[in-house]
Length: 142
Image (cartoon, rainbow, N blue to C red):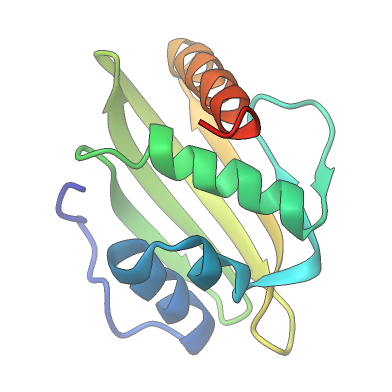
């Protein structure tokens, strides 16, 4: 992972836990502990919201394998207590990807809504292809 252009410490507790997971643990168990059972994941490449912890984990873990390479870094952070917007950038297959993670937490500190938005169009197409391949690989148990 590239060095973030923002600090990774000093945020409100819920967002700090996200940063600690992103930069440290990065395990499925660590992610599971952050997600509410009824969490909704909103993908930039899937038309309908994906509801539930299992499907959200699949998408976030696949994103970690595809977007989370050595060029991924957060560039801006808007920390609003129970909501946050984290702008990121990375390079995938030679394409510059720019996007945001929009995260909401409940009063127990569990993520209830996770939306990812990506630009430009070429980046969306690249992310779509990579995520589709990674999800298929994960489903096949590879």
